[in-house]
Image (cartoon, rainbow, N blue to C red):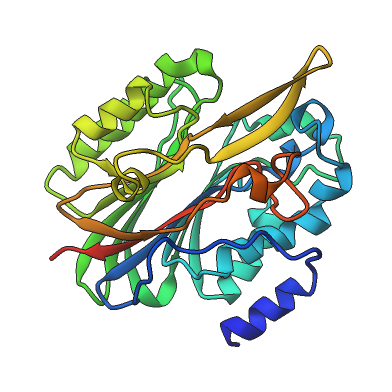
Length: 319
C-alpha cells in the first residue's frame, strides 16, 4: 500500500487538519542521507487536562482523536529512524500500524511508569509509558538492541535510555541510535546530569571508536543545564543549534498548567537531537511553529496532539 493511500486512510479520521510544518531547506533523499525524528508524544494516561493542561478541553485529548494525529505526524514525513517518549499507546495502537508501514520497533516500558497512578481512568489508561525506537526495516540490518535496567541498589533513578545498533545498508555504516527521557522538573537538574553521564559512560565503554552516533530525547532541561554541557564536551553537537546560528529553538514544549487554582505557563526548549560531527552533517531541520501559529491555548491543541513539538533532522552521512 502506498504512503499516499495510507495517509488518506489516516487523515479521514482527523478534523480539523493538523498544524502544517515544513523543513528549513530543500533536501534530496539519497543513499547517504538519514532522516531522524524525535518526539515526546504525551502519554494518553497523562493527558487528562485537569491541572495539566488547563486551557485544553477533554475532547481535544481523547484517545480516539489523538491516536490518529500521532500516527499521522510520524508517517507524514517518513523518518528513517525515530525515538518517541511517553509511548503508552504502542501496544494497543502504534505497534500494528507501524509494522504495516514498514517499521521495526523496540519498546522499553517504564516499570514505575507514572501512568499506573491512573489505572482507574478507563478512558485513558493504556498501560505503562516508555521509550520507543523504530527504524525502516528495508533500510537497516539490526545488530544489537539494549536498554538500561535498574539494579536493586541503583540510586540513580528509573531506567531512562534504550539503544539500537544498526547497519545502514546503503552507506554500509554502523549507526548507534539512542533514545532517552530524563527526569522532569527543574529541581532534578542534578539527577539529569547523573543520567546523562551514565549514557555517555555506556557509549565510552562500548562504542568509543564509533563516530556515527545519535542521541535523541526529551531531556527535560534547557541548554544552560549541566547535562547539555556534558554532552557537548563529549564530542556531540545539537542538530538544531548547528542550523540555527548557534542557538536552540525558542521552545519545543508550551503549555498552561495550574497550581492551587493559579494558572502558569511552561515554555522552553527541552528536546534535542545530538550527533557526532565526524559522523554526520545536518542539512535540514523541521521548522518549529510560532506561538501565534499554535494559538493562545498552547499545546496540546485541536491541531496538534502533544504538549511537545516533534523535531526532525535530515543528515548527510559522512564516510
